[in-house]
Amino acid sequence: MRKYKESLMRIVFMLCACFSIFAVAMICIFLFANGVPAIAEIGAGKFLGGTVWRPLQDLFGILPMIVGSIYVTAGAIIVGVPIGIFCAVFMARFCPKRLHRFLKPAIELLAGIPSIVYGFFGLVVIVPVMQKIFGGSGKSILTASILLGIMILPTIIGVAESALRAVPDSYYEGALALGATHERSVFKAVLPAAKSGIMAGVVLGIGRAIGETMAVVMVAGNMAVMPDSILDGVRTLTANVVLEMGYATGLHRDALIATAVVLFVFILIINLSFSLLKGKGRANNG
Amino acid sequence: MDKTASKAINVRSFRQKWKDYRRHPGSLILFLLVCLAALITLAVLFFLVVYILVMGIPNLKPSLFAWEYNSTNVSMTPAIINTVIMMVITLLIAVPLGICSSVYMVEYAKRGSKLVRVVRVTTETLQGIPSIVFGLFGFLVFVLLFKWDYSLIAGALTLAIMVLPVIMRTTEEALLAVPDSYREGSFGLGAGRLRTVFKVVLPSAVPGILAGIILSIGRIVGETAALIFTAGTVAELPTSLTSSTRTLAVHMYALLNEGLYVEEAYATAVVLLVVVLIINLISSALGRKIARN
Image (cartoon, rainbow over all chains, first blue to last red; front, side, top):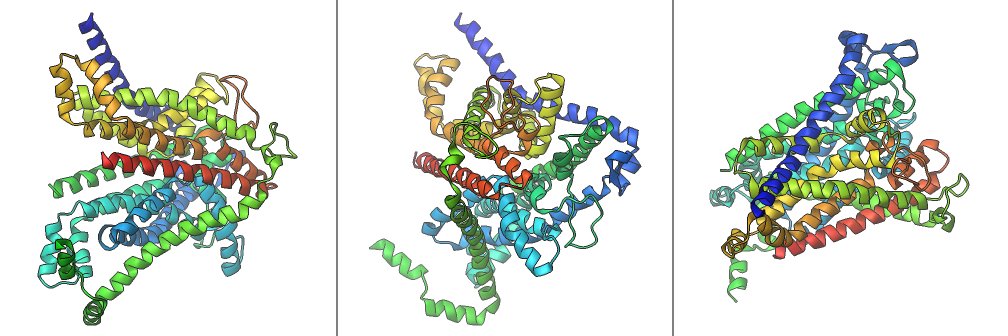
């Protein structure tokens, strides 16, 4: 009886463990099964390379959205990565223990704030400032980049800090013993050793930025046209789905799902490079 | 005594440091940049929290907490109750599933087995998928295929898949932190594997598991994109599992979308922010407790 129960529960546990495999497989199957036929119907070249998105006239070109997502993500990286890495260095090697006890929960809070609240903050604070400085609507690539740059900070700081802490102290001490200053030792000996871990954090931040929806919808302007400058409004892939899914039918709906497929492929590539980098970081530090 | 002596050797006076920096201006610049980055991060957080609280608290009118929602009072009470219901259902699905699968990964599977590796990769993938993709998946499967329409259960199932990797990761860490001597002791007393897991290993991993659950609650409360097309935006209390509901975050999105309710959106943001603050306080208290153990 006991043996029977033991092996039964073993199977139950195993099935539970397999659920995440099942979930990922289902997500892939459903997205691709609904999206790929739409891409085929529209034509891959017209869909991915078309610059006009007019669902009413059956024109489904998502190039503006792809470009929009890439611009906004790149902007977020430019804003967020330097601050994030420097802040991680501060937390790992500069800040006194007592300050760290306060700073760490603060960064976690930054990670916990809902994206809709970030979006609202961007809408009522950053957008008016941009309006005053540059004129226009204030909703632009630049605005979205700043907001997303703030939102990816905790991700980058978290991963980069633990990568910096994983570097053996002997590296730092060796540099100090050679007469380097504290700063020089940290930046020339510790930081290069933590490089792949920090890169993993950056890649994770890229994933967050490109997948962010609600905050971007609020501040990016959402025009489905190719942007000319960073002060133009853009629509990202995520925004395209969330704005039109509510009322779309037929091919329009399938085109939106296909938009999500394109986003999903981006995310899969980013995830893959994240796990490769993380594996490399682990191998480097023994 | 010993401690202060070693401190005196390691700590240099401000004047000495200044002399060093005069000789190495690059180091000074780096030092300032590093401090500046930390300062900016803190300042942004501080400004965001204070701004929302200062602008929002005056807008917290009693009518916003009226029992029934209508377009004149724009009450958030139904949304708050919906959020709690959504949270409970999601956790009821995700927590047992997450704990059981972590138990398999840590207690049953052979270390480095192929299944474990595949599960690791898929949970990491799940964690990286944006919430809008989850929302679309939930829409395709639960709303369209299962014909549940916009409903509480469709939203909860979507969220359960979303928070599963969070619960799995934290539970796994908590289980791994349980010393092997506990298990050996239990086996030595003649208990089977199953009994050992439920009576010895899981109870001592409770704080870690709780930390994971609290983290998931934070995600559930703040989630918008995954819910708009699965649970819908009806601002009333649900009558059954298949009625459409809006959670507080979705409520805030709806208010902003209509464009007429900025003051009410401020008030909602305050409530959301306070909930997140409380969740973070609990989770860091738990974290400290785990670290002490």
